[in-house]
Length: 252
Image: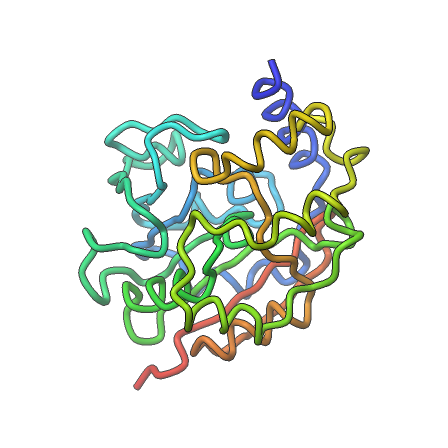
């Protein structure tokens, strides 16, 4: 019941999203090219949504930590668009893309995904590894002021680097006390009662629902720059999103 409600609520929120005014600036990085998505499929990339990229790309594979998650059930084939041939599905940690060779893709998509990583810099380093020189990252993050995270503060990039240097694993719950204290349940009815939310949160390694880190337009840009990307656009025009376009900085 809770899962069905969450999915229905998500569909409503995505329908309310306005388009991105500079959408066309994203197209040269994906049109006719091969990409990888982390945690797809994502409504924002579908036709009629804020960043309708699926219709433009040549091929798209997907990676998720499990074949069955809170958000989607996956087959071996990744059916991201009815107009396109399905891609491959990889089932592994998004921060450990061991089945994928270096420089395999022209671009990488991630929507409302990176905040669920306990070690986001480890993920970004892996995403950069599988991108070709000059490859693009199109990253969508929840803008904390417009979500149930609004009582928290944007995570300092130095803290995320500390997590990376200490090789924090995805079983980490060091942010849980802050989350439990500041989560705005009035903006997250799908999570159930306070007790339901705490129980789910303590089992996060199995469900990956926690927002370990909190983002705004400043720390998201700083994070990507420090991870070795050139940031070309940071857009806050969507209802609850920060949309970022970046490319691998060390391209020749």
